[in-house]
Amino acid sequence: MENDQLKDFITERYTSAEDQRDITNDLLDLCLHKNSRDNMSAILVSLENPPDTDQTKVNDFKKIDENIKSDMKEYLGQGDVQRPTIDQVVGHFDEKEYIKNADEIGGVPASLAKRGFITRSYESTIANNKLHS
Image (cartoon, rainbow, N blue to C red; front, side):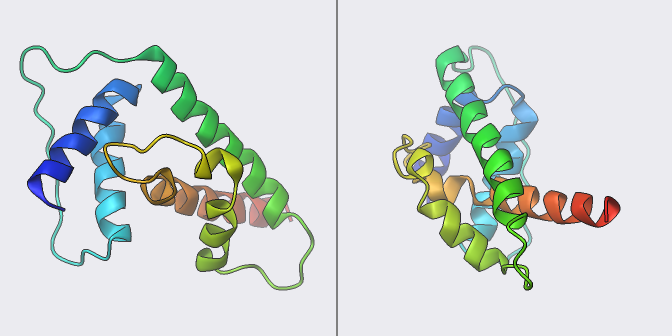
């Protein structure tokens, strides 16, 4: 990511993240999904006067996450003999209206910015299904 893209992404996430740890997690997820394979680490140092949290953005972000979790359970629970690959799952969620119509997150399309969350939700749902089988 270019420095300006990084600044925009972090500034936007400051306003829409409930917990600052989510900012670095989302940043590293985004870098992975942009095919970065270098050693990656991120430390977020909050100095005086960080951007204020916008509760509307926080709620919008949480709603997208809730929709992904709910839809993931439904999508993986369709009884298909073969479990979809993560690429198929990401493609499925890229077509969801709540992802396609979501605001960009720091200049990054929501479909790309949410890939880390989609991946974690996929893995969590698979693990929970195995526990309850």
